[in-house]
Image (cartoon, rainbow, N blue to C red; front, side, top):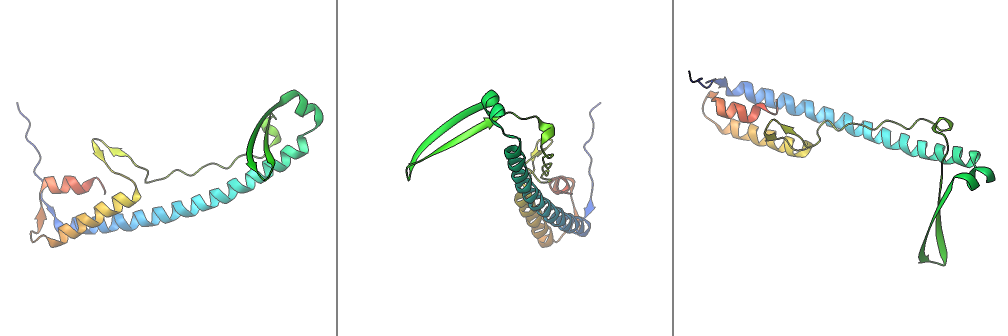
Length: 152
């Protein structure tokens, strides 16, 4: 027995309102994400500074001699040589590194459909709202609904 496809009629104004609501929600989520990223970057900078201070306090000749790996780069910059020193020190002697922030709108797939990043999704939703506002029909068909439902 062959299965029949669904045929759904959805009021156009309901979809437009849902898209507007989703767009507003996305803007708030993105703003919160940007605040969290800024806070994370500040915390990361402080953590790096704290690790550098802790490293300098822990360094002694014995540590350097036993665990050192040195790389040098001569960039011919004003007669100076950049010396980088890697020293292995136990993690428990350092502050805990701040946890990164997950991007809620990173490029992704929804099934076989590419959703894109925040800017791409916002543009798609705005386009859908514009097109739906230009329609004269009171209801939209299943196919149109399926094309916009991925953003809801």
